[in-house]
Length: 386
Image (tube, rainbow, N blue to C red; front, side, top):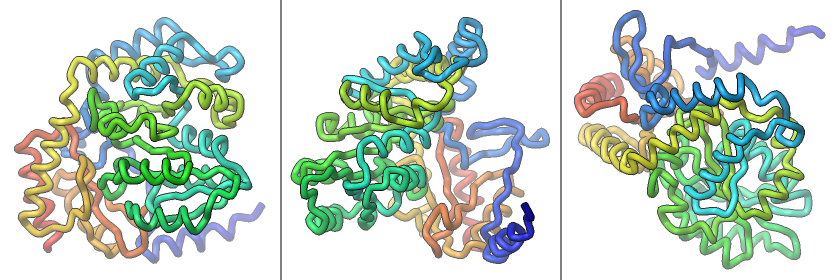
């Protein structure tokens, strides 16, 4: 097939400052070395600086040595190993739910779960800023998709009244910590609305798992909303520093997912070394339950330095701190200027964020010490102002 239709699409993206490239880095984490020089990486999701933690790596190696490099089959054939069941049991306990189910990634967890919860005759009420994987999952489900203004409980209430259940199922989806804005959903109020209207509620806790709540159990657990939230979704690729996704839920829903979730049924089980690393992370969180609190205190301090210079960090209230720029090309230029000064701060542009809201997305991690944060703040303030 001819490919002459492809280049105009790429040219259009470049013209609007939206061209993307995958750049290779020598290592991951919040503090890395490039060409022998230390660089502060504010674009890493390794929030708790655990990707190179000795115990976590040891657990991953032990799983590799015991089970080999792969699970060698899908979960419903011969791919379910004892280590998968051990992780699911621990996740369920930590999240405060009767059961949990591990998927190959966070994207697959959303793509597998939502089409099981709703179908063609049902309605999904989605916060306008939920992750792309949740929107894709809604499309896969065939359900009617109704968006509501970001974190606006009143708007959600109006939408629920506008589109009553009438015998069909309703599902509300939101994130607890939003991945691009770093702000926090009003979960208590949303849960109350879900209960009032008899709707199911699914919360994506990808960026809250490990960073909020007791032992990093997330904001659902912190607010005691386990009985009100139908599905607590999370990943092993953010604070857990590895790869994979999961949902915590009732035993009945887990059984239904095992029998119906295509993203679970039709794929190879996650490799043992990845599962072993996740178990190692849970050991660390249990032994050091204040890691998330320390991270949030550091993020608060960093945010205060930026606020003192009147930089717009939007509604950030977490380790994710955006700096509003607006123009796509300026965001890229500021990002490049910072890179030249030893600061990696990714420029986030549409369609990842709404048009006109290009920004720097900063992720504070425990690899960043106070002096690192102070130095970075000075450089960032100067780069944005000039």
